[in-house]
Amino acid sequence: MSRPWGYWKDWDNVRQEVAEIIARFGTVPSCRFLEIKGYSGFAKAMKQHYGSIEAVRKMLSIPDGRRADGAWKPGHWTETAFKEVIQGIIRRYGNIPPKDRLLLDGYPSTVDKLIRRHGGYEMLRYLYGLPEWEAVYPPWVQKEKG
Image (cartoon, rainbow, N blue to C red; front, side):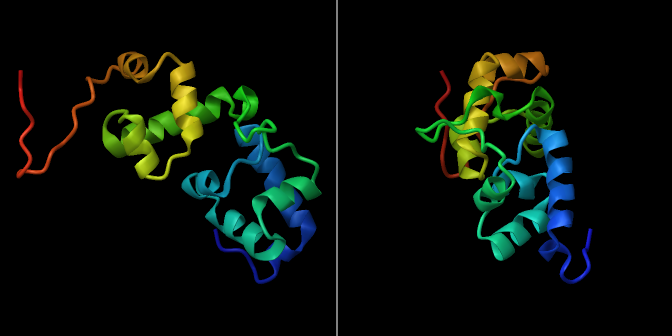
């Protein structure tokens, strides 16, 4: 949705949008995640007007969900947010591809960690009724069978 000029400079508008994001995802996730989920205007404005999403979290005293070593805490993502991401991945690929494919396409490593916490790639494929992942090779590369 297009916002009027100066909309994001009004701190009340930022607070309102942050409240909506927290209600949906349990925290204010990364800009990349927000862009994928349809909050690209918000993410871009936070970088442009306030320096970063981290700066906005700090100004609003919102924990970013990471431990001191930079790893995400298990509670950072809600179950609903995780299911939405998995369903989005399935819509995009028709399956749940391996970690290297997800990382290459811009999904955060947190998704891989959460998939592993939910039983791993094979288990999630089974739970969603999906076949085993089979890489698609270009015609000039032959996959050996057997």
